Length: 207
Image 1 (spheres, rainbow, N blue to C red):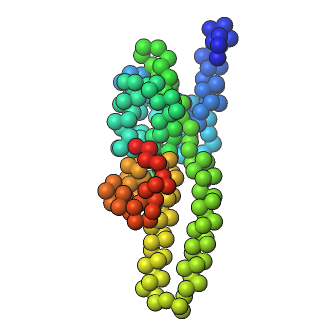
Image 2 (cartoon, rainbow, N blue to C red; image 1 turned 135 degrees about the vertical axis):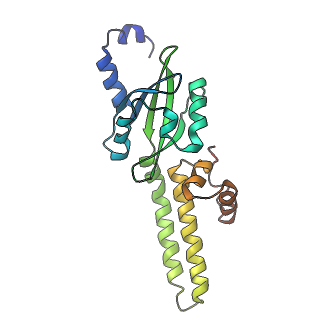
Image 3 (tube, rainbow, N blue to C red; image 1 turned 120 degrees about the vertical axis):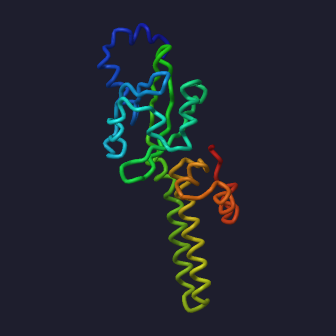
């Protein structure tokens, strides 16, 4: 906006709150200590709507352990990542919810963190892979009777492992550290599996 003081100065706090709710799936008002003072939720997803109960909690308490330092850094330098920073929230069932935040300083004491749920984007990106996976499964089962069972099991295990790794990378927006945590692997083990499945060059490391 070129003239926000002229076009927005007369807006009420309630109107600004509605704008934040419409602009983001999760909008947080956070102080310099990381305490969440208010929350606006613009999504009907139950996992996202649970964020309405974060008021009064520390922001770093509602993200994955690997992202807590990232939250601390955002509070020190809120506008250093104009493209946004992806953080993982965990829903009531233990499933990760990747949210990309942009943080804007409101004044010397408060920040607005506007978050967008990345799962719909991940689902769209996953569609071409699903076709390839189905074809790979069909190719494997077509070998029944032609190769020993142990070889089929090994092939199927590799296929499932690759599917799980690709899914974790998709959910975490190609953040390998978060994907490793999601899969219950060390980062070194994940890197080894990425190399074995030829995925090191097909995913950007978003750490």
